[in-house]
Amino acid sequence: TQLLEQSPQFLSIQEGENLTVYCNSSSVFSSLQWYRQEPGEGPVLLVTVVTGGEVKKLKRLTFQFGDARKDSSLHITAAQPGDTGLYLCAGVKDSNYQLIWGAGTKLIIKP
Amino acid sequence: DAGVTQSPTHLIKTRGQQVTLRCSPKSGHDTVSWYQQALGQGPQFIFQYYEEEERQRGNFPDRFSGHQFPNYSSELNVNALLLGDSALYLCASSFNVPTYEQYFGPGTRLTVT
Image (cartoon, rainbow over all chains, first blue to last red; front, top):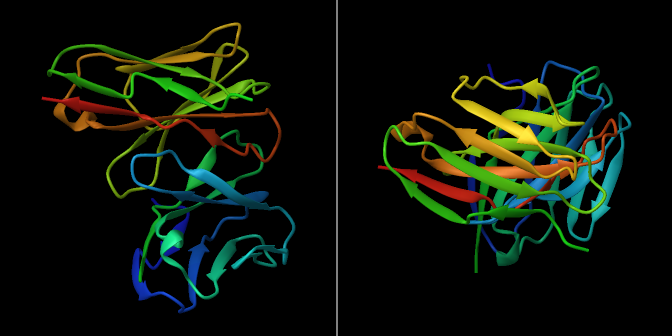
């Protein structure tokens, strides 16, 4: 059972377009993290959201944690080829020491 | 400040053999987690070590075992290798805090033939 559902699984768009990636669950998380992974490398932490409704911005990337802390979204404005990669969300459940991972969204930005 | 390091970077083994992968955490981190990642998939949690004890384990058989040393470095051992064990093995370290933000190493690419 996949506790964190990411959508879409794959996205290929032109440079300059906007996009949104979703991370959804029926479970409540105490915090949620977004990572980006490039081929042959380990995932790199982009952001952690903790408070329901929280919005964080990282240059052209905007992250939002749902009010009920069950879902999150990542919006990229004016995507660039350097944004290409596998985007992963991971949530921490209360009373648990491990992260629950989504399966990832593979993003390709074409020049 | 050294990040997470893993060794070796690549490894080729045959079925039935045993393998040991090594990980040194980011300076100051005391918690180490191991993950298996198939190509194009998200990481699958194997186990987590804290204070030299296995604290949490994912859905992996007993062929997968580990160890954490007093300096917080860690090893992952896999016995009786199967073809399906071929994957990227990632080590991640973190502070023992509720958010458990993971800092990953570059991984070890294991190929079982």
